[in-house]
Length: 535
Ligand code: GLC
Image (cartoon, rainbow, N blue to C red):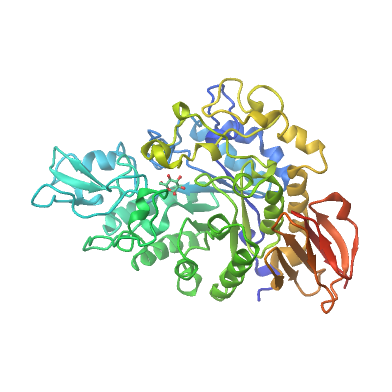
């Protein structure tokens, strides 16, 4: 156990992800930008979050909306200038908040000067910075590996008559991280931003960086079903999660550790046991390998409770937990579980042990917005049109107020705004004590001030088909009992032998707040309570 002074800002903070294209447009081009974010910092501070993670704002041809970077140390003019960035960083720091950048090391844009050089000839000095392979005798692809965005992961280059590897779009060639020059160049990129004072990175697809050197075929996935992305036809056992990736992560981590208090979050979609390895030996890997269980699991009380227990049990000593409900790649929580359960999800996210990450707009209950086919922008949606995989619906403009385009922009936005924006927006919800936003705000406030919720132990109490119950407790502080009904039917918590008693501090339903809990607890469907336990 750490004592209070050993906790760092990222143990105790709440992360808020901004998808910059969709947060606030300040220059009337329909696309969000850095100055727009600066304008909205008052809101973020009012909400109570203190760590901002920005999806990529670097120069990019935008084939994958910024995850295809053509200059790692610049700012895309769509988002503003480097001066705007410096100002954003300064004002965030002045408010006592932190800023984390998205770092995308696995691949560059095909327009990045490194790739332009690499593809110019077989003997170019940067040829080996990317993954080039000869065709089979019949001209076929080097192996069966698939791109996450559909089709083969190999693209033929007519000029130099080899294939290059791209785990994502063909416009996103993978760097060859086995090449020490690539490692050095990318660490220099990290250093550039660390020198500017950014507080850390969310590292994109961290488990993809290193591939098996022999490039064997990936085996078929026996559980594949037709509705799944074509990528899931194979198990990516040779193309991802290779042991040598941990050497790279420790190099990144050592660089971060040469500065004070910088954070590395890893984007990693892997089962828990494998995920844990990304904490590294002696916790010298990623500080926070993203834990996506609340995104991946079906919304069933027993499954969620079991996952929390397994995750808590699997954490390495000293490894700090984290929880995520949504991001720019996945359907929004309010769409996945319904608006009522999204309130329960908020309570869960903000009372579990570990750093929570909130995806912009989820605090309003924003839903996936249906985007007509002609308006789809996301390459994942366009490449697999029959599978309904577009990520646009979860990336629509933030809903600020009742004015045109929800206050996001004075012109037509790059993606349509939810039709419900006049009812569901910051301005309206701030005034309504029972809105999703008010619930988030109160949950955040409670979490930020109660030591038991910040650092206290997680004690599972009970779980059944409907409910999850647990206590968060830090010695010397009020403990909290959390009871959540993940179903829409009424549920009863048998309190006979447990003698849980105290007052309800926050509830999904206002009529429960302030109530004294002692005996049996009855909840209606979709209800949850947080009880401050009597000492
Ligand atoms: C990550 C990003 C996603 C992007 C992909 C390729 O999964 O979150 O948005 O498309 O990497 O960079």
